[in-house]
Every structure is written in C-alpha cells, then in structure tokens.
Length: 227
Image (tube, rainbow, N blue to C red; front, side):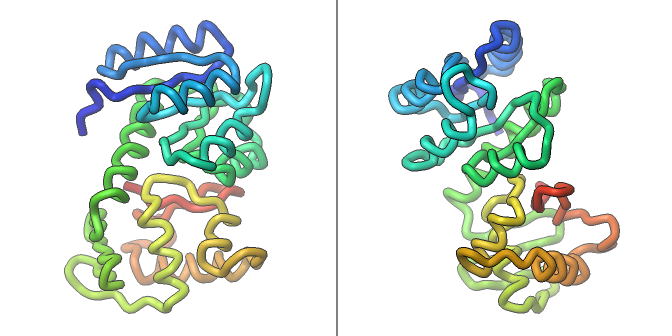
C-alpha cells in the first residue's frame, strides 16, 4: 500500500506532539495539516477532506469524542484517536462515536504507522472487495460463504452476522455495544450471549481457539478481526 501523498489532519493542542507527528509523517510521504481545537478540526475536515484524521480527545473547546460524533454525521474519513486517556470507558466512548482505532500516549511511531496502514487498508477493502481473505479464512459476503483453507465452514446465522460485522470492519475494534446492536438490534445488551457466540465462532475458525489468530479480544472493550 502506498501512503505517499495522502492527506493527514493532526488534531492536537500540544505543539510538541504536532511537531513530532508532522516530521514523522512527512518523512513517510504524508501531506500533514494541523488543527488545535475541535472547531478548527471540523472546519478542516469539511474544507480539506483529509484521507485520515489523527485526533486527541483533550481539546480546549470540545471533547474529541464530540468531534468524532459530529464528523460521523456526514463523513466516513478514518479517525485514529491518540490520547493520554487509557480508561476502558474512554476507549469505548470514542469507538462507539465512530473512531476507527485508539492509541494511548506515549506511543511508538512504528505502532502508529501500523495502525494507519490497517485503517486505510480496511477502508479500501470495504469500498472494493466483496470477498475478504485473511490467511486461510475466506468470506464471500455476496454469497454468504465462509471457508477455511479451502473447506466450507457451516455457521449459524448469528455466528455469520458476527463474522460479517468483524470482516467489514477488519482491523478495527468493534465494541461489545456495537456488535450487539449490529447483530441483535437496538437495545439488546446481553453480553453473555455475544461471548458464547464468539467462542463458538472461534472453535469453528481458529486453529487454536485459546490463542486466536483471527478474532482478537480487546479486554473490556470488544473484538477486532486481525489483518
């Protein structure tokens, strides 16, 4: 995947973080612009249409979660949260608002670049690929066919719906609340039944369900299909 020339908006009110990200991302071929308030970020997203937004939560005029929520009213631009907040509740709130990933400060540039590549790859796959392939796992969304190493896997409708949600958001953390809503509908909150179905799904897909290759747990938050 080529990253050269892609536009990244960095939203952070810390000058040192802005400078570090600008130098590091420019060195990877990104075109970097900056905003230090929520309002400035919303305006920049509207006018400049970046390919990716890196967003801090602690902005001086509004919380980054609100920036994410307002952006998601009209835009699907990938958003990676970069914040000192490391509580599960903050991660869940940001992801539920529509963020694509969450990385806590301090962070390594290598990890951030890996998250960026994953988010952009996922968006490209969603836009263009009706068939998703990860290692030996192949999911044909058009025909509802799931196979592993060439052999078809029989899933229950609920198991398939969970896998479909994870596949179409591959690389992104889906919170428990998001999965419950997507699979069972608004207002459903039985976390136990979600865990049981994910466990059953792992036993059908994973070479070793106790050490998942595909469906990874984000403790206290939700699940991610690893790519």
